Amino acid sequence: MANVKFFSGKSLPVEMHKTRMVQKLNLLPVEQRKEAMLNAGCNTFLLQNRDVFLDMLTDSGTNAMSDQQMAAMMLADDSYAGSQTFVRLQEACTHMFGTKFLLPTHQGRACENILAQAYVREGSVVPMNFHFTTTKAHITRMGGTVEEILIDEGLNINSTHPFKGNIDLAKLEDLVARVGADNIPFVRIEAGTNLIGGQPVSLQNFREVSAFCRNKGIRFVIDASLLCDNLYFIKTREEACKDMELVDITRELGSLADIIYFSARKLGCARGGAIVTNSRAIYEELRDFVPLFEGFLTYGGMSVREMEILAVGLYESLDLDFIMQAPLFIQAFSEELQAKGVPVVNPSGGLGCHVDASAFLPHLDQTQYIAGALAAAFYVASGVRGMERGTMSEQREPDGSERFAQMELLRLALPKRVFSLSQIQYAADRLAWLYENRSLIGGLRYVEEPKIMRFFFGRLEPVGDWMEKLTAAFRRDFGDSL
Image (cartoon, rainbow, N blue to C red; front, side, top):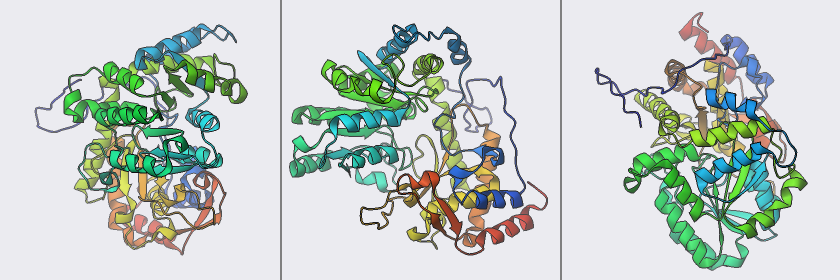
């Protein structure tokens, strides 16, 4: 790992790459940002990208590709059967995870669909460290339920535990004793946890959960979509792993899990997904779903160019200089905010900087969609698009009542190799201003609410005229600045 120190004593992450292509950005005046947010139904997903200055909505499909990935596209073999592109991708997966079998899909949620179709039945219970929106939706659609058995520190925003994504083994054992191993199609670990601040899982926890599952005869599944950041934290926070090579860690994960799946929109900086396994029986159980839902077994809904990009991306994911940049930038972002008094999740995790919306807006309650309101207000103040990770991202209970999230977070994702430190400092400065004016921010209410994935498509409106007041305060303090 590159260890670059400043003579001045400053601690700043240094990019171990250079930029050779740029994309022009546009920063609207605050009045136009307010109108754009209202036109988008106060939902950052519905903003037009032309109206966004810095897009921190997600790291899914928004990461920058390397020169080697761009070059690899020219090697693509678009043969329907016997494609050498498939062979190269399979070799990359085998190199990374030590697995024998590959099932390509068009993205990560397609993998979740296949696993749910194959294994989840009415009454099934799926334990996991924490749910992801699409994962839970696929399981509940098939009649199953999700049980979150995260360690208690995972939901403590200010806990200093280095691996807040770990499964609590005692909770897992109690759950299996209560519902029975036969009713558990698989145990899932998300590495790391998306909805609670990108918090990582330790290699030791993977080992313990794997041993437990094998003793009980339960499949063990790893969602490796966010694995790059998790690898960095295993390497730097877990004392027993500091001298391990990244490939040794990933291959051990391949040996511990029955199934690994991932979204290539995150892992590999491509667009696609895959399921890998060492079990021929599992491979054959899942294989028929690929041509049924995705495409032929050699491409699974991906373009061959994307498969070539993914193959290179998997090799690059084993380069510590590559994977360290995002976690270090997230840490720098979080430290800058904390120095300005803005409440964030500690310790900083992967994927992005996570602002504690409940502490930011203590005058709002969860019925007013705290994190969604903060996301809307932050766009008005800055032109930066973040993502609500709170009650809006939950689905209602079967009786129609609101399911309140265990955390209300504004996620400011940092796609790999995309933003500069000056842009991060800009975002931190505007968020600090917003924190000083937080009393102006009001709540939201739904005016159009889809039954499924409402945070993608739903439209809301401000409760009262707080957006007008916020816009006026911006003009008062920033003058003619954008």
